[in-house]
Structure formats: C-alpha cells, structure tokens
Image (cartoon, rainbow, N blue to C red):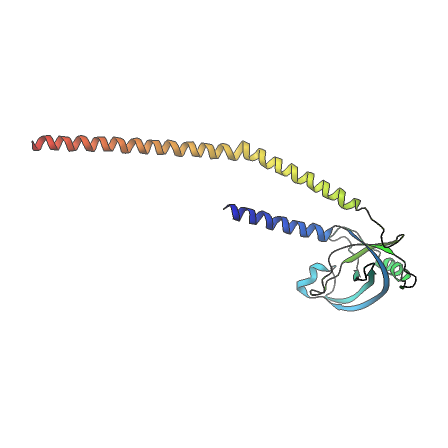
Length: 214
C-alpha cells in the first residue's frame, strides 16, 4: 500500500506541475527572423494546445532564433476570456510589433518574448506569444515576478489545505478509528471470555459424565 500511495502522490504532483508549467508565463530572449500566416488544420486530440476556434483556420506565427542558434516558433492567437486567463485581444498589434522587430545576424536585435505553452515538433504544438519587448542583449535576465507571486500563493493555499486536512483527521477520523479499534478490542475480549466460559462448561460436563461412568 505504501508504494501505491507514493505512486498516486507522484502522479498528482506530475499532473499539477505540468499544468502549472504549461500555464504560467515564460520568457525567451530571441532574435526575430520572420513572421507569417499559415492555413492550419488542428486535430481534435490536440485542440487543448490551441486557442478555441475553427479546426481549420489561419494562424499567425513568429519565427525566432535564440542566442545559442536554436530556433523557436510561436503561434500568435488571442486567448480572449478563456483559459489561460491572459485576456489577450491584441493579436494583430503583436504581429505588427514582431514583424517590425525582425533583424539578421549582421545587426541582431534581441527581444524578450513572453509566452505560455510548449513547443513540440512531434505533436506540432507551439507556445502562444503574449508580449514582445526589446532587451539590451542576448544575456538579458527577466525576473519572473508573476510566477513567483503565483507560486507563493499556491504554496500558501496548499499549506492551508494540508493543515485543514491534518486538523480534520485529528479531530474526526482519528477518534473514529480509535473508537472502532476499542470496540473491536472489546468484542475480541468478549469473544475470548465466551470461549473460556464455554471451555469451562465443556470441561464440567465432561467431568460430570466421567463421574457417572465411575
């Protein structure tokens, strides 16, 4: 049971951690190399990784290159009032900003792109760009204040829930378990007493018959 318990805990942590990592904003320092709009067919089993809308639609993309030479592509879609709650309605403006930010290797300009989501070439999913702003260079550091605040808040909520559960268990579950254990012990003691009494009576009857035979 211990292995089952820890397996379930690990599974819950993995699911919650993946959800939080996908949803919280991330920052990439990149050089924008192009923007384009593609007619995209979104499979039903991957719709959760895209904004809501028609399964076949025009999607804007932003192509970038990181300082280490690795490429990164972002989709540019509104989130509207849906989830995650970024309330993004400025897709056209962001597309224009990204197009204006294009540069080449000879005269690179570096930008911080704020996004959420994952890039996976096998599943053909892309992170969704939320904002873009210029930075001093490829080594610029962005402090994720939003993530820090949200994670601290979640830690406090989890701690409060844990304390409430511990108090509930101590006040409600543990006494019930203890009472049940005591009741079981009492029943067990009565059963032992009954068996001893029956054994004594059987010995008495056996002795009485033995006396008759004599």
